[in-house]
Length: 332
Ligand code: TXA
Ligand code: MG
Image (spheres, rainbow, N blue to C red):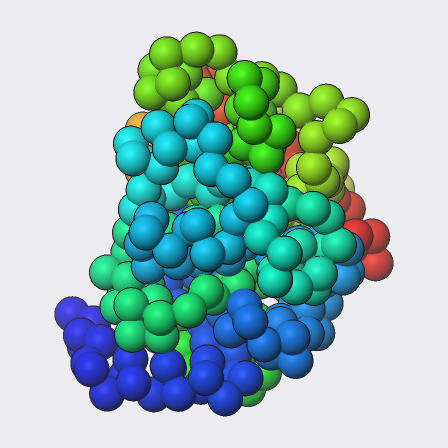
């Protein structure tokens, strides 16, 4: 059992945030690399630690819905509906920004991303800190997100002042991002799929949700290549996974496989991980599995194709982007 987070741990983390430090903390989606959203020097440290380009905006995390109006220009009716239904939880909403929000946080855009996470440790931290905390996923830019405190430590070492260990993130993939910044009667736009699906959003709204177009705000999680392990990754049907693993072995190479339904064949040097067959379990373990397969030092990561049902859409999105990455030098 994990030692529980104590009031002292929270006080230490709040002090670090208040003095411009970096605090990694668990959320129900993935771990975040947090800094005081009102302190530009602290926000700059987030970009430096992540190696993230400055035109990629950050999500401001708040303890409660009541604080949202301090950070945004207007709250359209659709946003109120979504906030009431899904916050606290794995949803990020993009609003028109309030004038005081730093260009560093918004990437110079006229919008700001807000999330109210539900993880009890994130809640304790945000409540005790009181202000907004910017927190990108706690991974180097373009790489696999962190879902445990151990992942965060291996990614950042001493560059982070404090890591709050809240165990493995429940959901396992990043929040659903919905743009409501156009306001009026414009349909909200789904910018990044997540555990909350388009179908869930439409059910809550009672109306259709739109796909991004040329006027939608940019989101780096939408880059063709993102969430990428160092080992080249590809997705294919189960029989092809086994065939390719065999032909790699015949060339003296090794495959690392993320299987779902396929049964492990006897192949020399093969690394095999059987993922849960349900979408929730699969998402929960996805990044830990990718990290383990990447660490095995094989020549290729082969991922078995996913079912077509909507609850797999966000997982498919992440794996498709992971597959678009070839090696560290192609990092975006
Ligand atoms: O689950 C999550 O969302 C996690 C946890 C820690 O909250 N955070 C996360 O942050 O995934 P990050 O920075 O890795 O991804 C946030 C995405 C990026 O693609 C960013 O470009 C987009 O949100 N974003 C942030 N502010 C935006 C804005 N004003 N307009 C459009 N996209 C924005
Ligand atoms: Mg990220």
